[in-house]
Image (spheres, rainbow, N blue to C red):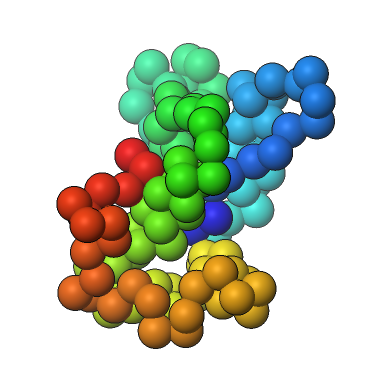
Length: 128
């Protein structure tokens, strides 16, 4: 998982037979919105006010079913490198709101993985 100022990325394993992404996203977004500092919230426009939506989150989300181990690895790389891509950190390990350090502790990544010149796969491809 990686939480950035205007979006987040995560990988989930849902219980067998459960594909209820919309409810989970609604709960996550609602909890975050209720507990985040007021300066994180921008005044909602008229359409959002009518729908009782905050301006913290976009209405949509993107879901992708992981196909295999290589697909999982590409998505993990994309998620953990995203703060560097957006200029928020020089290295993946510098971004505090990420699971990168846990992956390092588990031996998935080297501590110096994901510096600003890292290109990912041979073609620079990620999961997105």
